[in-house]
Length: 101
Image (cartoon, rainbow, N blue to C red):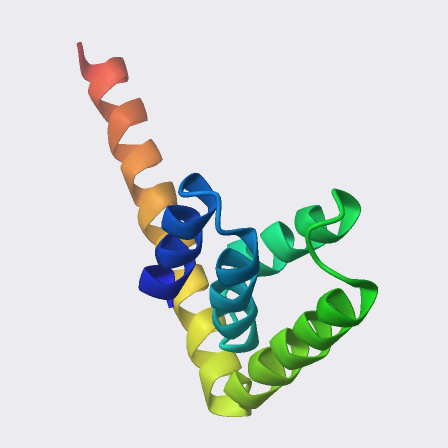
């Protein structure tokens, strides 16, 4: 959905805020975090309605909820643990290298 978000930026730069907001609404509904933030900024600055922001927020959350699963969450935890273990190993190797010099 980054491409859709970028289309919104392109339209924004061309001065087509209505079209830009539509692109960001679609991207936010697909779970793109930056697009949701831009919609919030558009609401604050008067380029999007409160209804637009609420719709984007609900659709974004629904997309995020749909992507969640126990298996996915377990894999994320496993990868984070693996990454932490690798970082600890690298730190130990650096410490050993400095003590042998």
